[in-house]
Image 1 (tube, rainbow, N blue to C red):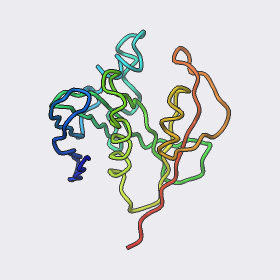
Image 2 (cartoon, helix red, strand yellow):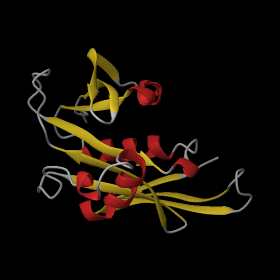
Image 3 (cartoon, rainbow, N blue to C red):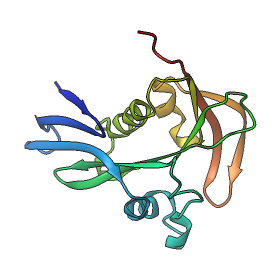
Image 4 (cartoon, helix red, strand yellow):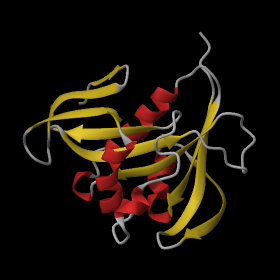
Length: 175
């Protein structure tokens, strides 16, 4: 059983016994810089391209944030969130997830879901918003489990592969 603790910009999963490794793990999600995302972006998302392809437009914009998931102080997952409009949607407040990745050796631990959920938590509940992204075809099932929906036809981003636009709307919480 995991105990999740949310603090300002930090998600801590208290020490737990790892079935995979047979030892205790400390998991932490915290804000990081764009530059800190590049090694995992390169290894997982752009492995056959120059490292410069890991630098996204608006990586350093004031409205952009990046999160890293650390297992025993080693970063094993990342997510970046950009305030970016997509013409498919009329929502006034839109955010795009880009560069979501977990090292292959650390998948199937719910780390990707924890990163997405923490990003949503940081976006807050002060107003309605929409999250959208271009999901690789192989990741559709993962995002559907998080209740994101596909919209539009499949399309190709060369040289990465086939993608769908996926989205989810969030309504502000009324007290």
